[in-house]
Length: 341
Ligand code: KG4
Ligand code: ZN
Image 1 (cartoon, rainbow, N blue to C red):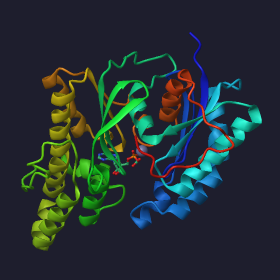
Image 2: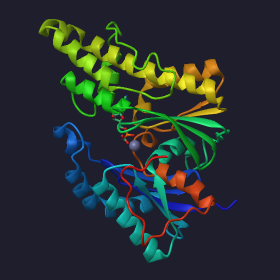
Image 3: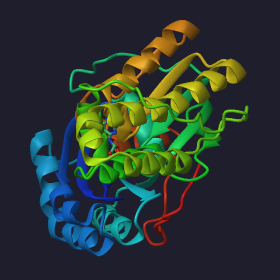
Image 4: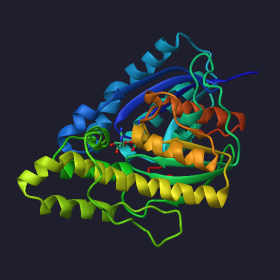
């Protein structure tokens, strides 16, 4: 079977990334992280991100070709159109257009969140893992900017069935770490700290009375702030791991509760889980348990590099768009910072 070779680019946030994929197989996936640049601001500083993308994009693309060990012919160029930071997206789109026009290649624009879904179907050079998605499928996307449940009846058919009404789950974990005066990004720090603690502090269950599939994290964050402020220095010091574990437990309880609702309503045959927070081993164990109980196979991205923002996931999503001949016009393609399903 002909499998198109695609160069893909993602500059949606604070990673400059380029990859070469062939079908679902990842031949290279170069990620230049800017985390150290943004650390001192406790979040992503857009103008700095844009400058760093501009400085790095050419080298990252060249490195992606080099590591793939394969020169042209390419079949297409793919790029993240949104959602993301407007001035950051712009850098990747400009580069993709240049390559597309110079080599007369079709251009494929990809929704970044669609990329997080397709990260679960990525394979290594040898075509492993061989897993196949069975439709209908449910997707749980948990990142720094999004918390979403998406229902898919087929490739390319996305129905947004739940999302956060306020903060995203990853954003809430980042804020909780800030409240504990720890570093950025907070998710991995909260995970590590939680392993030494117990969820002894009770939290309200957000949206407890609601049977819809939406999420809310701003209330948890406020409760956490008040809780931390109510402790004296000694109790705070003694309980820091317990505080992290309690917040993490509450944040993930909501994810599994809503995903469980969605499984009951939509009866999916597979559950695909993507986005930066899916790196969390405890969250994975909860989702695996849920899948077992509901008899739904659960897929995570097969490697850590495919979990956070990366271009290979954009290339894999683009492969399915290539098969449907969903191409964009390189003269007119524009960034869509608020693009949704
Ligand atoms: O998908 P992603 O890399 O970027 C966005 O598109 O937002 O997600 C980043 C988010 C951050 O909020 C970060 O704290 C969180 O993912 N994260 C984690 C872990 N690793 C990254 N959250 C919990 N546990 C982790 N191990
Ligand atoms: Zn992302």
